[in-house]
Picture (cartoon, one colour):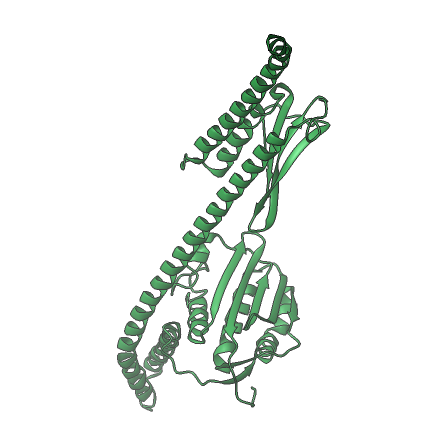
Amino acid sequence: MGKRAQNDAPAAEQLAPEADQALRERAKELSCLYRIGRVFDTPSRSLDEVLQRIVESVPPAWQYPEIASARIVLDGRRYETPGFKEGCQRQASDIVVDGKCRGAVEVIYTQTRPRLDEGPFLDDERRLLDAIARQIAVVMEHQQAEEEKARLQKQLLHADRLATIGQLAAGVAHELNEPLSSILGFAQLLNRDPTMPDGVRNDVERIVTASLYAREIIKKLLLFARQTPTFMGPVDINNVVLGAMGLFEHQFEKEGIELACLLCPERPVLTADAGQLTQVMVNLVVNAAQAMPKGGRLTVRTLVENGYVVCIVQDTGVGMTQDVIDRLFVPFFTTKEINQGTGLGLPVVHGIVVSHGGTIEVTSTPGKGTVFTIRFPIEPVPDKVD
């Protein structure tokens, strides 16, 4: 028995350093996860700062930290350890968010090391790297959820504000309509008096012109507030686009605007007010043309997508900032010069689209152009098509 104990002693002595080494490796891995957890638990940090701190926490957990560099590549952006160097031996784990690979976490040895479980890397290092990649994916999913929540809240507030403005606009329009009609009526009666001096007649003409202009503004306010009666019927959206484009074809040639109509071959049909849809197209086309004072390309496209008829109006004009986009559909807001517009064109577009159960979205980049995307739900329509 004593002899056996003597024989087992060298084996135990040999196992002790291996166990000690394994223990040190586990301690490094746990320290790495702890440091990364601390980074995630600091909400005030930006995503860039979070990823940079994570990548700097990785090399100390590997078996050869003195020659290890780490890198995170996410959506084309790179986060690297200080003095990062490429090497011949590499271990990587993909960052997968919502089933899509968005990048990877990499550990690189700048000098060659003997082969172990995975090249020069341990199985435990593989599991640690996969865990880090999963944690980054969770952070990205959380960030996307927060961004989507903020976007929906902003959209809801915007819709609520427009609804409130619409109610106010409708009330003002109705209150002004009656006295304005009286002014216009009396001015037109005065104009029929044959004994009226020419100077006075000219003044009365100005009153009539101003009253008619004011009446048009009231009509637009009622359209924005969705309080104008509609005449619904089957409408081919392609015909609406072609009709609106035909009004400006020659003007576009003179102004150096190239027109492209990409119309859906299915000839999508809506139950809608043809006149109001034409007004939508005309307003969007005029707006796009005014955004291209030095010429450009105007593309109008129609398609059917997921139960909706979609109409897209895209220009290569001056574009808009997000601040301008946020106020586009507010009545009387305009970026044009004084006397160049009433600021009611796009609010009218919004009112008509919403009254037809549709939605309108705007994306724009300053200096590159703007895209308006309108969606109308497809509903059963009568046989006759305008």
